[in-house]
Image (cartoon, rainbow, N blue to C red; front, side):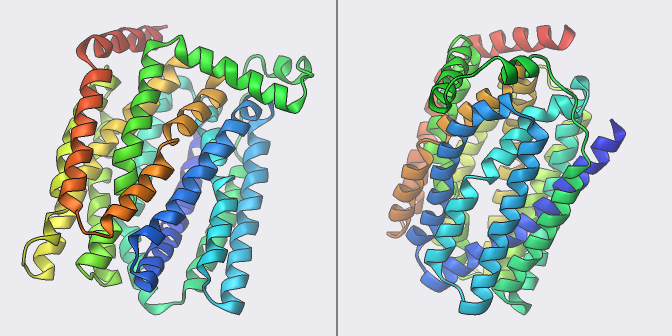
Length: 419
């Protein structure tokens, strides 16, 4: 599996670098051009709605059809969408309505690619190596987040928007070629799923989603994770999908280089956490998640303070970067342990549907929340809004991940690990 590991990690590096450059350029351009957090939030909402729709439909197909084929076909469509955006921008200039259309199209593709990869990890790697691989993936991504924003900030100052889109397109093509050479192990029941299910399309989708729903609801742990994801994404992720750029670009008037430096320092926090997580073994992932969510709730409120005190840009940059770095470090103790836990306890033939259910239901409140917070941020009520968010996160985390649930999850996780 060493060959797969090298190819997969290289592909992650390439696509993460391209995606960061693209997202930086689009985010800065929208806020610089419109000065509106609400318009910026619309682009995020479109991606969220597309995610919910695409994963609700495609979860069943991820478990039914060859996962590698799904990944390759959708990555080709992703390349086509970027090519269309590049050609339009090059010939006619930036148009936010056309960008929204491209975002809508890509929102039906990108989440499915990511979800299919998540469901396929035990086909690509040995099961006992999953946490180590996730740690290596996290290290690569956060290394890119460390250096990428500085590169993106410099590029933004020297090249046009369409050039940055073209760079992402080239890197997307390279990632596609790398993924083509990945080897996937077959998984049990794949033949039965394909040959012995002649349902009509709609019946098939509904039936498979019902199976996934029952599978999740029969697990006290998985059902709580989904409810937790719904609420926290609806407030925490929704607000923070708009907040950093709004604070840095609109309120503090950071130049692209400053935004890049702040984002890079935030990436350092993620890098340190993923290196640490790749070296240690967490025996109780839900306990890690619980503590991390409580810490993030506090950090979210204090992140907004530079908008209210007088200081030099350098001091504000150091403050934003330091709090952001701490948040990024802490968040890795949510994402990696949660993925490791789910990879262990979910049966392989259900992974595509369960991950799709988690991501679709987990994001169902995100569009409304993002628009809501984008609207509130127009009035500069950052501290009050984030204080409310923090209280919600603390409350739902304390209730859903109580000590009894944490102990139960530890027993299940260790039993699967020792099986």
